[in-house]
Amino acid sequence: MLIVYLSLTGNVRNFIKRIDMDSLEINYTNPLIEVTEDFVVIVPTYDDDITEIISIFIDYKNNMNHLIGFVGSGSLNYNDKFCFNAKDLSMKYNKPLLFTFEASGTESDVLKFKKEVKKFGITCTK
Figure 1 (cartoon, rainbow, N blue to C red):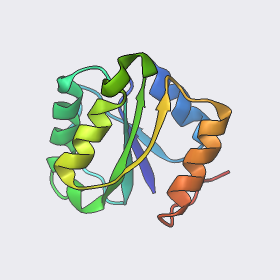
Figure 2 (cartoon, helix red, strand yellow):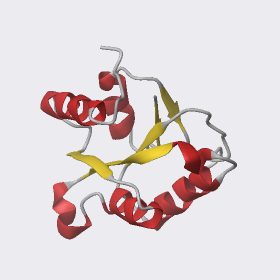
Figure 3 (tube, rainbow, N blue to C red):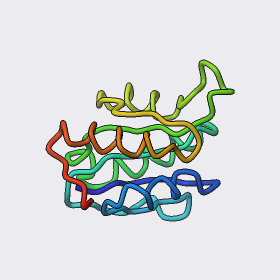
Figure 4 (cartoon, one colour):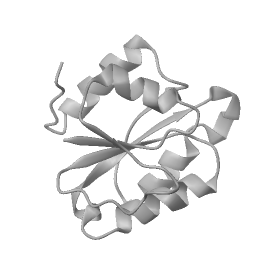
């Protein structure tokens, strides 16, 4: 299982390092990457451009067939906009919002994330 992510400030990248799972970072210049295994997408909360770039990735070739769901990172200071990119993508693709965390997440968030993805038969390397 693969974790596909976008990290603009490094918060999501920091979270990815701590979950110790296979991952693929995409960005605005390389969204056209084909994946051939099931994946979860982790996105930060910033603007509508994130939803657009992730949609380009998901719609590329057969990627949609491997999409399991979404995870969002954000700031609770955004109130109702907390993790809105992950929520929007979840609704757009009718896939579950698996988990949300603030900034780069706490150690508790890392453990909760691993527990959540195990529900989908996803194994972590640690």
